[in-house]
Length: 179
Image (cartoon, rainbow, N blue to C red; front, side, top):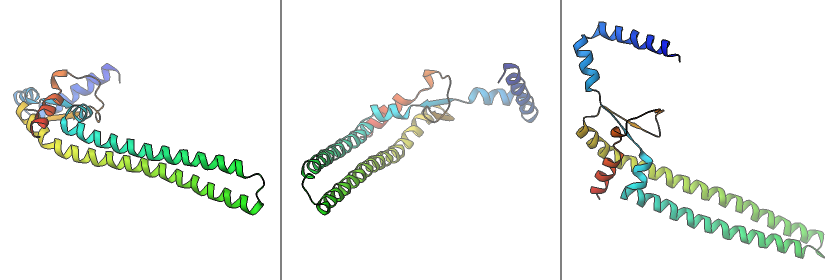
């Protein structure tokens, strides 16, 4: 948006607000508005509660990866056996062997999908529980700092910010103090 258009819109809004609110009250309300920002992923990575939750997710993902890798090795072994033993088998026996291999391949695909869904579900559960745990802490820190708004870096399209408005470290300290 060109600067002239933006300036015009801001001026028009100021005129409308000036007509509705006394100039002194308007200036005072602008001075009183304090905004904070929080980096939720930073809080999750740095706080004890976040580290514990992320470690549980990582451990579950590691176990699922090992399970999938074992099944992949088994599937590869089956494929190798199928190729070796297919020579000299009757057509019926070969079809049965191929059918068994195909079933194993489908089971492997399902195992991979299920593992991915389980990890995603754990991540979602963690996010919901962590945000519920964070809400009162963010509320406390925001009230102490006299903030009217707190934006999450991940959700808002922030193009510039003053690092002094970041309450992430305060929230980490307060959250850790609750443990």
